[in-house]
Length: 399
Image 1 (spheres, one colour):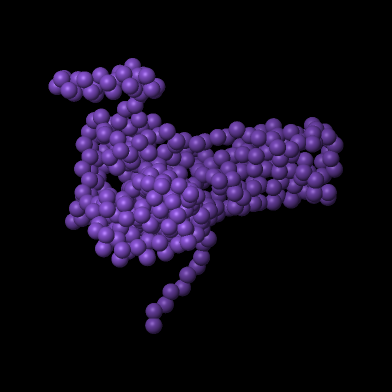
Image 2 (tube, helix red, strand yellow):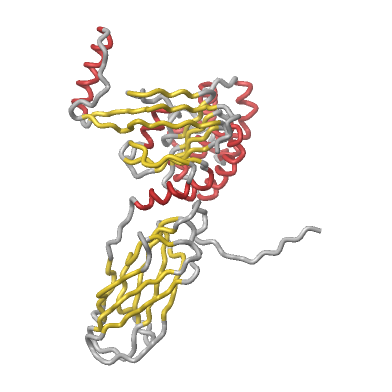
């Protein structure tokens, strides 16, 4: 439940923004709108030929101390919405009310004058937010130290790497303590150490700031956001404070169950696969079953071992399971059935997939390897930075 005592800093009511699909129609409609505006003729807000809604009927409110996450696939309208909020685009429909000082990191290097030095850009950015030169000088050392680019601070920004621009941009935005802070995907450019440092700073700012955060990293979104908007083709598909539900809907849009056979020596053929999962969803602590059937194409003496490898959405291996129960084989064309019960899964919320390998235990030679044999989503309330969470028995005493 929102804290009704805290003031609303961002109010977005039915905001829409349209664009043309090509330059010619854009110039044509722009000229017509200017002429109509000059003559006092009302400009219609409906779509014209070769136009589309990049953002359509977006509404939300954000109070001081709250953070809203904007998620969605590339092209969903997130960055366009941020530019409308930041005043770079005028909305075609709707109303936006923003109170206080606004800091924004919506594009790499945005707001920087490339021919000025880092130090000069700090003064420039601060003056736009209404800070005096004296106030900036009081924060200058802290900004430079946080950015970790002390030796380059008097070098033109055009010579900075992308990582250096992110460091300086975030340091300026954070240390000028804006009432509203808008952060796009730019933090993805920074290294892990600096990203963690940024989140620590965000934790310090958040009680007195309204934060709008855009990211494709669901652990980052879950880390700081108390509300979430899932956008799809410019529209809101989900809006609420159930972060887990929003993340789960986001992952469901990227389902890709295409198998990829990466190795096959002709010994085995996968003829069937099955699972007892409903909607490919795993529930924490609830056992689930995976079944694989393979046909023997060449004579082998023993059933091959099976290895299951679980990977996260970034394709990093996070867990595995060996099935080494060996029995004698009789002849070609036999069907071997592997029924595997995964007990008490401890995965945290997110999307995962499974690769399988069959190999000869006596020689350790791989016989068949198939990637992405199953893809599943783990249900939960929030996604954590870690891929799975261990159970424990705890004793807490107070003396």
